[in-house]
Image 1 (cartoon, one colour):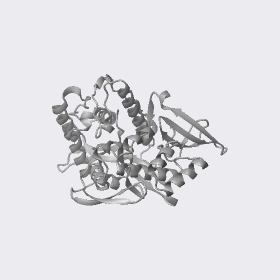
Image 2 (cartoon, helix red, strand yellow; image 1 turned 180 degrees about the vertical axis):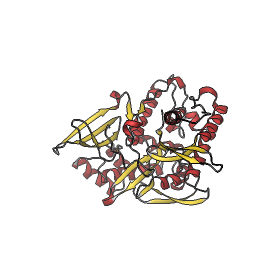
Image 3 (cartoon, helix red, strand yellow; image 1 turned 120 degrees about the horizontal axis):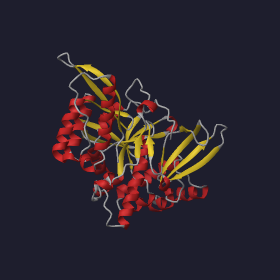
Image 4 (spheres, one colour; image 1 turned 45 degrees about the vertical axis):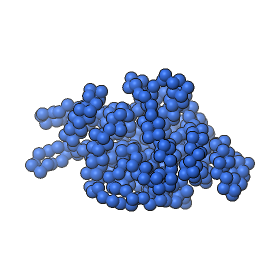
Length: 402
């Protein structure tokens, strides 16, 4: 599936010899990821083609004459499509050529020199562990270091991920984005420009039944337990009064297994709750809080007259969706649910060949490129994206079409 790359803005720059070139601002999941020139992307494409041949998407051609405004916009659109399409192949995503180029692009963009540094990784109980990293370490590498420190079994890494998490007033917690394996957490913290944003470790699957796979690992069990308590405290998961009393009793006994067994029966357990936004259903201007998980999108809608209405969309009825600048995290969750469903189907039908990139650290699957489907697409930039003055557009754009 496509990753959420986009190029909403570009700038004319002068080089040392007085020539002119265009610098493209590449965003990933709504945040500035890097700035690159066409020539750099062109050379990168040539390197990828030497490894992967003609299976790559077409790359925008060179122009040998001055570009008109229309030609410049067309090239920007084509580069955006190229970045989205090239990430559909998980073999490309995992290749050294792909990762090393993007690492260097991030380091250059944010003027970061590779060196030793210390990074706090926040756990679901809001305590942190401090780990030594290299500023050029990817999220995949940082996750490995953090998991080693807490004793998390290596084969279970694919069930967890690193997230940018914003801690607001009165203990409010907001998951901003999931860090891609090739992102540099050290750079992402500097580029997000979101106050009180930290790197957090959380489970990264939407099917609560997958908890059973992790129960034999002490560190994984601790993480699930901490996150379940946090989700209930933040009212992301909504136990009944009777369930709450039993959960509190298990918590006092420190009976993590029984606690989690009961927690899986709680409404919205294991769901990811997104920040409040607006929607046009059932009435324009309605406020909505989305909770995503267990193959559904649960919407708590507040109507203009302050009445509330609960609406649930089953993933089995979702065929496609369009992504705008504030819906990236939602789209990532939807893709995750589809991936998990495909794994279950593959388990029931061994002849089915699929690849689930996000689980690649813990499980291997065969791939047939022709079987891949992309369920998400971007809305037209011109009609939906408002360019903010700063590089973080996540908090400055109103979501109108969830």
